[in-house]
Length: 349
Image 1 (cartoon, rainbow, N blue to C red):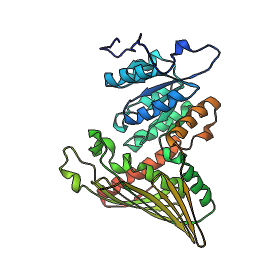
Image 2: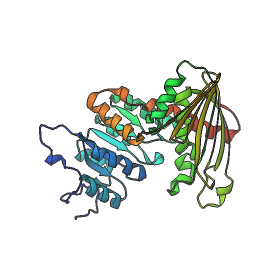
Image 3: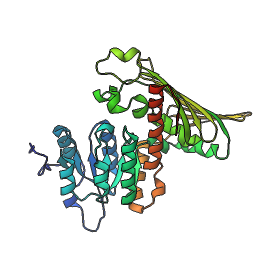
Image 4: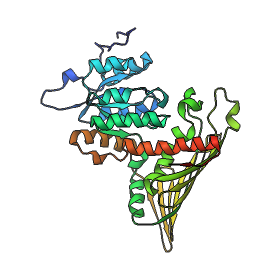
């Protein structure tokens, strides 16, 4: 195996799992897919894309050379440590952007300007103005863009969404009591945006996906138990009140202080009905005279990634359940909560 000291593709390896571009028959069309950022979530996507019959993982990029080399060897790809060189050397159809939100720079813009379709992991960033500028470039480019709000692809979420059509929602309650995420940057508020922006963003996105847009945010946050963990500036407890455009009232409580278990739930209530989603496994619909429960059978990451790839193959954008614009709306709410907690004032969107 030959390693590199520069940001150049690594050639001449004995690859194991997927075919290389040069081995693909000319009469068989394959999406040429690249990855930038090869952390934990990227490994999830890599495994799914490698099994997709019409996709070939052509290139992988990470600033840590060892990460790039390992992924390249496993998936039969070219390895890079410099994204600009990857763009110069590869002809990609699609790119998975799995770089942490504080380090995105102009990755999306550069790829879109070359006509490369994008899957962008959540959250989109930590600064709303920067993300809005990205959105304009992506819109002008015309490329297909999907974002990493994978829970939208759960079968129970679709059932809940169908059930709520035409119903007046009065109250939405959610909670997520999780743990401190592994990377050191996650505990740094200036890099991650905090638990709400990076982790609880999924829960807030579910609130909005099922109950509509939010117009007012009021939040209180504190750094309590975890304040003695070195490098920690992200609040470890959050309480957020929201008002939806429909007039419904909502609340979410979140924490990453040590707990004996993990808990996440969402409740949506109206006149003689309650919809409850426990974790990502169970949907319960309670009405005056009956209670119905559903268990999820969805591999939601698989559904999400295949929807993106099929959208490219068919030019059918409706397959994508979380557009860049919708992900911006979710980011705006979480950033507004941070602002409200810092100023003590409500934020109107």
